[in-house]
Length: 259
Image (cartoon, rainbow, N blue to C red; front, side, top):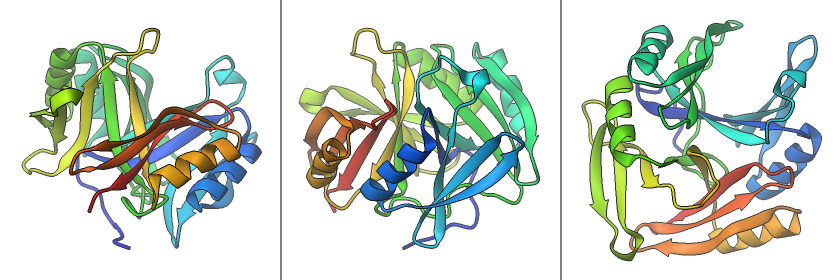
């Protein structure tokens, strides 16, 4: 299990679930992804649950309070940046929105919640005591983040200007053109992007979690009370994935690499 003590600028480093039922969510994800959950009090009325894969923190979840009433359960993707305040300013300059201004999270880091010009939300994170995930890509851990958007060209330019990513357009044959985001200064894929095809679904970032067997995990989602939105399918020579929903309605994806 490769572990991390630091994440580079432009890296997806954390995934966080906002849910209507934290107790049920802990049971679901512990059964599906093998998480060990640790509750931590982060305020007078809030419990923040840190979720481990092995000995390393991999993600987190919390129950939505009154301030989030009416919002659907959802997974949030965090991008590590060198300077949250500077990047949040770029978000606005490039046509996005700052939904929650930069603020300190105790002594563990500084963050902001933002949206790109099409409305896809994500979080910015500058680490202090908490780097984000100590493990990525292993079963149970976050392994990929993918943007579904209504304007591929504008999104590519936005993330290039704001985060510093470069883009690669990959011809996937029958699956169409897939865009890869590369981190600044290297050919390390930071994430991907596809055109939004589902009517009524807003632009969004989708979190992928690694599993040992995509088909078995998808079936387990059903057995645990969730839904399979897109059944397991192959990406030729790359891997196999499924898009699923937990019992409270938060959508995420399962992924097993081909190699």
